[in-house]
Structures are given as C-alpha cells and as structure tokens.
Amino acid sequence: MTICSKARVVVGISGGVDSSVAAWRLKEQGFEVIGLFMKNWEEDDDPTYCGAAEDLAIANESCETMGIPLQTVNFSHEYWERVFTIFLEEYRKGRTPNPDVLCNREIKFREFLDFATELGAELIATGHYARTRKHGSLTQLLKGTDPEKDQSYFLHQVPQAALARTLFPVGDLKKKEVRIQARTLGLPNSDRKDSTGICFIGERRFKDFLARYLPPNPGEIRTLDGRMIGEHDGLWFYTLGQRHGLDIGGPGEAWYVAKKDMSRNILRVVQGHNDPALMRRTIRGSEPHWIAGHRPDSVPIKCAAKIRYRQSDQPCRLSYSNNYSIDVQFDHAQRAMTPGQSVVLYDGEIVLGGATICAPDDASAATN
Image 1: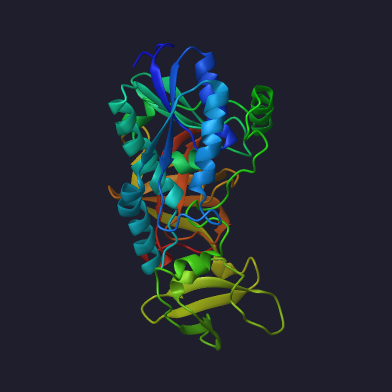
Image 2 (image 1 turned 180 degrees about the vertical axis):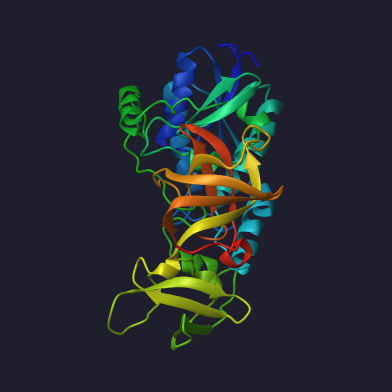
C-alpha cells in the first residue's frame, strides 16, 4: 500500500507520553490525525487500580494542546471475552499467560483497526517502540531503536494485514527524546510515570487480584525428592522461578518454584536461584505465528530468541516437530522458561515470529 502523507490516520491515545508524541509526529508529517482513547476494562474502574478516568482526562488535555480531535470507544466487552477469559483459563491450567500479547492481537490490532476503518482511516498508529519496513509485498516487524524500550516482543502475533496498515512513529526514538519532544510541546504527560505491569491489575498485589476470580486450592509444597516443607494456597498463584510468597523458612539459600504438579496439586521447589532444575536449553512452542505469514523453509536455522521482555537476544537454533509447534534449542541454558509465556524469534532486528512456551512434560525438553 502506498502511504500518502495526507492520509487519515487514527492514533491510539492512552494518556501516556509515547502515544501523544506519536500523534504529534504524524501531524507534523502532514497526516490527518484523529486520536482514539480505548477503554478496555471496567470490572472495577477504581482510580487506585486502573484509572481510566484520569488517563482520559490527560489524553483530552494532550490532544487539545496539539490541536488533534479525540474520540473514545469502549472495548471492555471484547477485552473480557477475548483476552481476560483466556487469561483466567490459562492460569487454571497452571500456565502464566501474557495478556499484553493477547491484547495487541485481539484488541489493538483488530478491534481498533476495524473501528478506525469505520472512521474512514487508511492507517492506524500507536506509541509502541517498534518499527515496520516494506520488503517486497510483505511488511516486516522490526525492533525499536531504543534497546531499553523495544516492545516488538509484545507485537509478534500481530497479523501481516494489520502491520501493513500500522505506523509506529516513536519506534526510531529513544525514550529521553520522546520526553524532550513532549516538554517542548508543553504536554501534561511529559514527565508522567510510565505504566508498568498489567493494566487491569494496577498497583495491587497480583495474588489478591487473581483470588477474586480463582478460588483458593490449598496443597503441599515439596522438594523434588518428595520432602514436604510447606503449604501453598493454589498452584495458579505461583509461576516458575518465583521466590517471593512461598513462606518457607529454614537455613540455606532461598527457595524457588521449579514445577507445578497440577494432577496432584503439589508445588515443587528448589533452593538456589540457578538450581539445575530451573535451567533448560530446549523448549517447544505451540501455535507459532509468523510475521511473514509462513514459517521459514530452511531448518534448522540459527537465529536469536527472547523468552521474556527486555531479555537480551539469546542465540539459538530453530527446528520443527510438526506444523503446529516449534523446537528452540538455545546455545546456553535459560532460567525459568515459563509455560504460557512467549518465545519470540529474531533475525537481527527483524522479528520472525513467536510461539507459546509449552510445559516441560509436553515439550520433552532437555535439561542442561
């Protein structure tokens, strides 16, 4: 698609500084810019947790300062059905899902795109730190220029058709440059603290939030050799590699979650941050999504991968066991590769795609 500088583009405005500067940069380039504030959560719309009202007020003020119209839309129902319901079901199964990946796929680059199309927009834009590049008939997804803020990890499931109509105006900037631009414009969010964690949880304890939807299911905490050393409240309140919240005393190094035995409701733990039980070199990923629309043909291939946000690129080798999963063998053992999280694959700055990490029992993973 040929992009015209006079094209109408709808920018997702969150109340944060990144999306505001993204909108301004597009306006400077001559685009017809419309801001859109998306409300995705209203189960407990409390300013203490997920203050949508405050976000909207700041978004309004920012858009007024920039001379950009702002509309609002409520995607709470869609978010509940296609993100939060899956989020809870994954926890029930003992996995640790990533709602940001789901939200990008189902809401920000699906519902948002459809709504923008109804507004007559040719393009959408967000404040993500990522980039795109045309490569023949395909649109490549690239890392953001700022390695400390690169958000391509969360975007690996965005479909090709959506990427072709998406702009990431701050993807070539560093965070400090974005804040300088915001201060120059006099935006009210120029020094606003970045949001962290999951939006609908906010500042509250994650376990307290999850307990509202998943009931306690007490069980035993045991070592790998079977020794009982404590009790847990429910396996879904814990994740691999977790240290805090175990309430296990005694001498020696700290205890960490090594395995969740769902069939017997037993939490298995080990002592030491880098205990061998926490380290693996090979994982299997299910339901891979490829940015190009198809998987790389020549395998095995050398590439790099991340198993968590802000992790440095880890050299690895990609191969296939079937059409529905991938096998990733790392050059070096990785700690706490968590079922339900994403393994995202890179060729330099290019995002190849990614998949959902399977449990070790499902992946036939080798230990180091």
